[in-house]
Length: 361
Image 1: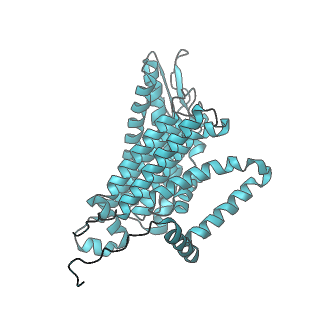
Image 2 (image 1 turned 90 degrees about the vertical axis):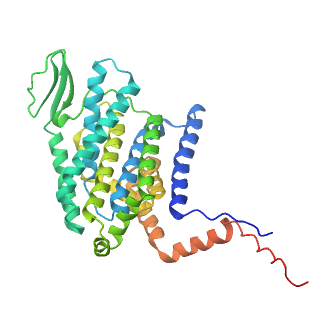
Image 3 (image 1 turned 135 degrees about the vertical axis):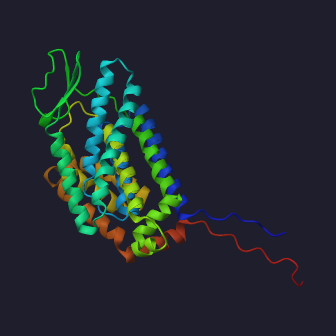
């Protein structure tokens, strides 16, 4: 009888399984270690930012790695989500809403606000290409940060107040939410590692489903050959705008998680350096590689604290580690040797083919 064998998984399905596996395994391991009291206080404080940076890296990979566009303003959309979420959470807090309701309402509001901002910015920006696109997205990121520097908002018995002036009529019993260049103040820290894990899984679900859909294949086709895509009737602008908008909304969601983890949040936190840091996560993990971006975000967030024992030399060591990893990742010779090692020692050997039936004795 002929032996029936199952077909292997597609590369996209393998990457999807690995991405979900990394998230679930990481959450399970950290949860067990926390229950045993084996997680240091420094790592404990980094758990929520790590989840936020994973969300940011995966969402930016949708634009840079999958759509093929270079965006340098991702921190701007993160700030839109963060400040929107802080305002919504603060308003609902005065109404006595429970923390889980406040958090997820803030996440929805932050994602919607960042998605709308991404859509409006993407319409003119995505008509540009290459370096021009990078420069304009960088400019928009800085514009958003400077707008946050002049926004004042608060809530009192007369309702919600928002203005660009410091004297905006907030009563003495009112609660200030946004204080211009002083940032968000009196923030209730309701973000948790469990909420971060949920948002990471939501981000992976959205991005992986886009990759495995007809829309995702159209986006990658537009990335690989714009002229050929247009010749077969694909709307390049529409596909790229969809990826940019979804990426912005996910960045806003990560911003809410990040913002509700601190009692005070300054607008300078979302400057150009933050956008570059997120881009480093994507490039180091591999363009289009979702689980690689996750690992890069985790390692590069923990690494500076792990190198703190080197005092003044820790950032030098950090830079050297980045260079070494980059060389190892994108060196064909090293990659071929690693692949050969994996082929020889890590992969399971395929069973020998069964002898043909009905042959001569």
